[in-house]
Length: 401
Image (cartoon, rainbow, N blue to C red; front, top):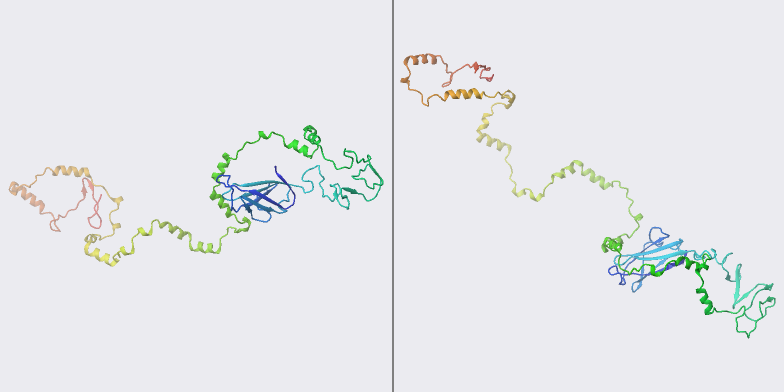
């Protein structure tokens, strides 16, 4: 049953902690962090701030709650947690200090009107001494009874006291008989209807057989097993790092610090892009000891002048030569036809004696008209090739169609 505690009253709460390994062994030597929830609100530190329970012995711990912790009417949940133990939960019910939450009792302090009477001589109090009620004046007291035969001047007793009688008399201290006690237990629940009475509360709240309630034997449920797998001992231990309120930490708004601004000025976007060129380990590149200094420009030029004779052929700009667009492919068909004719010529020329003298003279007459400006080379002015007019002079103007 949930313990009811008066509102705004300091309270020491005791609890026992068990090992999270087997859930039955007493957990000793633990620093158990305490948080509380008032009337269903989120859990947070007690009024005193971050609080750890104090170990008593044999797995028992205690924590002191102050009047602020118990200042809210309603359920008060106290939670203890640390790595290596099953979570501890204690549920208290904070009730009004005046009537403990029972509406049948006056909701006022005992020294005010409409409250319970207390012993004393002030307003709304009765002066009780030695089992007797002392009245201020001896006025009409019809119906009063007295516990002893003493001076009761002005009292009207309901019956004459006879000391010889064994039955209890009005005013005697009385003890309930066994039958009277049994009659209380035998009272029908249908008759217990007074709101706020103990009988009515029992009828209202004990509304099911105890045997119909959970037979839970203490083993882990599926949900508990899942939670244990998620909240490992390591993760639970990490909760110990939450040792300060988030509000006490940095309020950094995200703007660049002076140091960041300096770094940004040094590491420009261009320099940062150059880092992409560092695409291999430096150790895989040529070491200084393996480096050979290349020849100088003068050495390269000397080598080329001495050994590269082909360079002498570069006696004109390449741009002065025939462009690709001006090139005409040779007439391979006609060339093939010429070759077919020349293939019919004898491999060795005929002997001079085989040529008729008249023919030789005629041939000489023709050859004498030929001009050889360069020895071994016939001067000729080609005007057409294969019926295609040829332009150019073979000099500054190249031959071509």
